[in-house]
Length: 189
Image 1 (cartoon, rainbow, N blue to C red):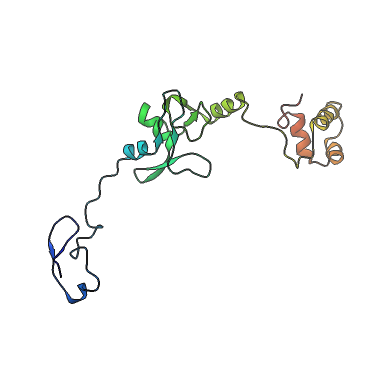
Image 2: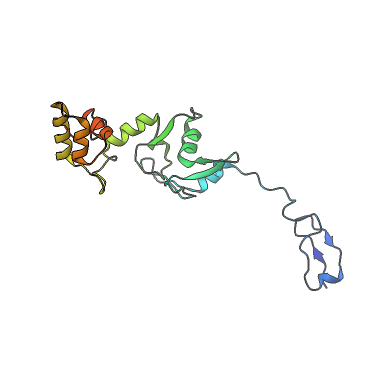
């Protein structure tokens, strides 16, 4: 039988034993892959390996792991971090954790720093509404439509009892009150 050389890189000869004939070992005891020093994980390198970097104006799409919500994710210091948040901090430095990193392009996979901006939750909602990406139509199970909402507001303005209005339209009294106060159905005048 040929000499067996340890494959960990130490080039030591593995001492021969009878059972090595059937299944020759690859390492001297204690020299396995788990013991060897691993290459240091560099989060920046891992980030750039997973980015499809196109032109400066185009979206740089994340090609690594995606969360169910569509945002990219990577490990940073042992913790999961959204790829677009990491990209922003990589290019512009640290930022307060309570701020959101919002997308100008509305592409959740995009990590191009020129497409990202810091904002509050309200800024993000305002941006969504301004772009017309928010509320689109009524759910199929809704009990009310625009005509009924206008009627409810008219009845409340004419001092009809909210409980009776709720009974007629098969909704709760609080729904009638919220419609009258324009907390619900704000878009209907």
